[in-house]
Each structure stands twice: as structure tokens, then as C-alpha cells.
Image (tube, rainbow, N blue to C red; front, top):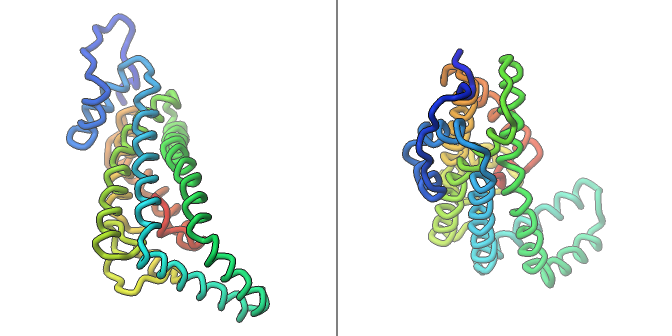
Length: 255
């Protein structure tokens, strides 16, 4: 197993610019991660991509939640959810009607505000959470790695997520539907967010898989283990996380 960091006295290689690292993570991520590994810590390696993800997610939220056709779909899903609550005895019909009236008046504002805040949380949480997973997996392999180096790599990798958000935005506008990411969920004509089968299809997203592959690459570069072994470990975690998100009803929303 190769040592995770350069030996003292080794001649450092020339560093690329932040912009180069951000763009090259799409084409030559291995080279980018190798550079991050041997370079001094750089906050912008993770902060800049996260800020880009926040902006992309905000554009998605405020654009998509301004489309009448999509808002109507959301209202229909909310109505269905309230009806299920009434049928299950968890709320009365009067409470259901009152809740629907309130959502009709305040729904779009609440959705935009709530989603905007959530997008900030998700944008920071994702790379830091996956970096923690890389750290845990590295420790199980008896390899000691700096957590923030993993954050830099998973942060740069989140540029893939930003691309996915932009793609999802265009698909949402073209298809006129909220759940429109590059996933198996596109095969479902009448997507039901309450249907766990539909949520499972939506969770199989090309962008998620791409990002997970980059997380595996980060583990490979930081520890020196073979990429197939790193990918097996990371994708096992990804699979478990997808199952948990689908069971919780959040599988189609996570990115």
C-alpha cells in the first residue's frame, strides 16, 4: 500500500488554479485528487463548489416552484397525502380541509423559503458527510488520513452534483414535472412521490452514481487501496443510504 502523503523533502509539483481543478474534476478527477493530496490545505477546494451547488439549487427551487403545472402536481400530491392521513385516522376531514386551504394560500411561499434553506444545508452536508464516510472506511483499512483532505475531494466532486441540478432544471421545464432528474424515475409517466417503487427508481440517478464513483476515487487516492476495492466499499454505503432514503420517503429528493 502506498503512503498516503508525500515524504518530507520531496519536490512539490506545480499547482493548478482553482478554476482548473473545478473543471478538470469532470475530465481527469484522478489528477485533481492527486494534486489535492500532495498540496497544502485549501478551503476554497470545498467551499467554492459548495457555493456553486447552493446557487444552482436556488435557481432550481425558485424557477421550478414558479411553474403553474408543477405547483398543480404538488397540490395534487398534497391532497392525496391528506386523504391518506384521514383514511388512516391520523386527522379529521375538517383538519384536512383546513390544512389544504392554508397550503393553498401559503404553500408556494413556504415551499420556496423552506426549500431554499434546505438546499443550503444539503449543499454543505453532502460533501462533509461523504468525507466522514471516507474517513471511517479508511480507518477500517488501518489508514490514517486527514479528514479535511477528504472534504476537499468530496467538495470538488460535488461539481458533478451542480451539473446534475442544472440538468434536472432543464428537464423539469421541458417535461413539466418536479421529479425530472437523470434517473430511472423518468420512465414513470405519472410519478407519485408517495409511491416507494417510484422513489426507488428516482434514486437510481446517473449523477448520484457519478458522484459516488468520485467518492470511491477519493478513498483510493487517500489510502492507496485498489480502486475496485474502494468502489465496492463506497457503493455498498451508497446502496444502504438509498434504501434508507426510499423507505423514509426522501429517496427522490436527495441530491
